[in-house]
Length: 298
Figure 1: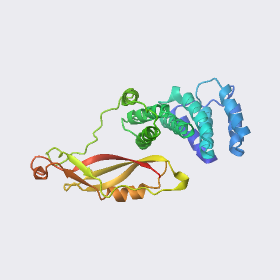
Figure 2 (figure 1 turned 90 degrees about the vertical axis):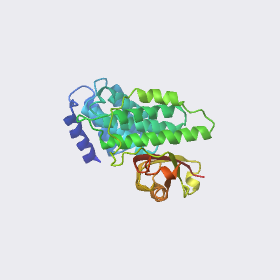
Figure 3 (figure 1 turned 180 degrees about the horizontal axis):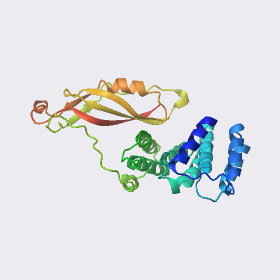
């Protein structure tokens, strides 16, 4: 664990955050972080939180590193209230330098939204998660590329939004409207990417529907009864409308159904509205198909 934090420290310095070990308050943060790492407890956690709260300077390598270790410790404990508290504080501290440490900023926002939903399921958790989705889908690095961490976290945020909405609707709680979610996403303009792979076939894609047979079935389990989740799959359609190259884009909150999802979706097929027009006025082959699946364990 210490070696991981040392690596983070080096990376943050490289990214441009100042190392300010001599600044008032930083030495207390470093000492409190070490105490938490040496002996995680409510007392050492409270000590680190107090040291971070007392610090009024700008984000520094040491303060960012300390917040990250605190969020990691709280996540390992499984205490959702503590996770939300530390993740929200970390994200607020990272906000001024989110362009320098975008991954740390987005991940703490994500942890806060998940913890909010798991601790006290309220529709506002969806709004918090929409900010994560918007930020990660819009983020591009200095080369103008969307890094893997942003892509993966964006899909996870999308999956959580789907699962949360299903939960609220089943619990007869009104989820945020599409207009509210879209307004948040619109605040994060997404650069235009070449998402569709060029095809040698100039014909447009056929209208039709996906025949989802066999149906996706999730096993029941007492320990997880009533749990909602989502799996987002990506795949291609071959010239015959068969699913090829399926992959898991996101699977939350558990990954137990990944293999089953891939096996099931791999047997699905696209049915055109007018089979006689396939190859004449339209085509079945397609890339970058995204299919979300919602599950509830009964």
